[in-house]
Amino acid sequence: MFSIMNSVHAALLFLFWPIALTTQAQLLTGNIDLTIQTGAVITINGLSLAPSQDLVLKNNSLIHSDVAIVGKPTNSINRVYKFSNQINFTGKIGMQYAPSELNGNDESLLQFSFAKEDLIYSVPTNLSAVNVNTHYLEEIVASKEMVVVTATESGSILPVKLIDFVAIGNEDRALLTWSTSEESNSDHFEIQHSANGKTWKEIGHVDASGESKMRTNYAFEHRNPLKGENLYRLKMMDKDGSYAYSRVREVHLKGNYDLTFHPNPVQDWVSIESADWASFKSMSVTSSNGKTFVEVSEPQKKINLQELPAGVYLISITQKDGSVKSGKIFKN
Image 1 (tube, rainbow, N blue to C red):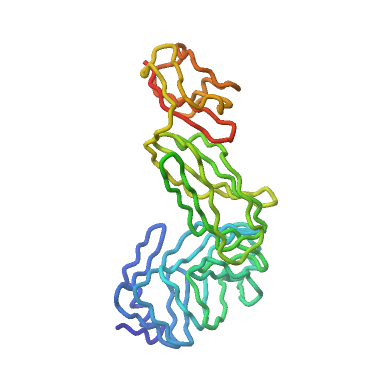
Image 2 (image 1 turned 90 degrees about the vertical axis):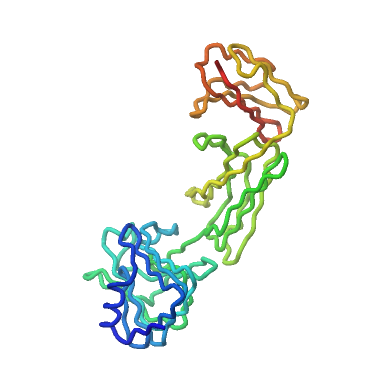
């Protein structure tokens, strides 16, 4: 078990501690109890901790990122710290930042914002003290549970926090589920689908809760997706028109619905067969790089591809319920 008695010992210890000096600085404590005793001061890549009660770190890491947390009316600064496991801290916390990291925030109004394991961020108050000359922020906290530490303007809100986004394939459909830990001014989620990651189409719309400080769960079912690879993402829309995208999730389906093309490969005319033709609404033919070559308002049972260059193409048929059936065709 390590103990840090004062700021001198702390500086020496972290000088030789395994920190990755790349775009992210990282503190790793491993299985060893690292006790930062009352009165000590440690600084890890600009984040200072001066506990007034002993702080024990075990099996923990600290990662610094320059990716801001999205918020209203301003995002956080481009300096975000994240512990791998939540800590409970009492004492003085400080942050050294650069003016270039303010990210549009008024430096004179800068305040700490903390998030616990649920990633619900506290709304910054007027408890932090900022020194605009030295570009340093500090605050005294008591029993502050934290996983993420950043800063933003007083009164700003760090709103929709997507906890998870999962896509699972099941026979001829894909089930999408996601959860938020907090929402502010949120309007709706636009569900988008792609076959190649370049061309995206909206396939659904789910209303958001608007204002929430508790976990909210959502779900959407995509019926009859593509055979093979299906890519999904969420476009999270706010009431003021601003938006952000989720990470992309992939579902791979074998597919057993009756949409066939022949001949395949094809040189000129390709025939399309399906037992569900009456439900089809429109049709398009796109290349593997997302360029649309054919787009018709009514599906056709035969398409002339003679003028198209050789390659792989995706024939997509939109049904009247908004779902899409697609398949690949090879052009010689």
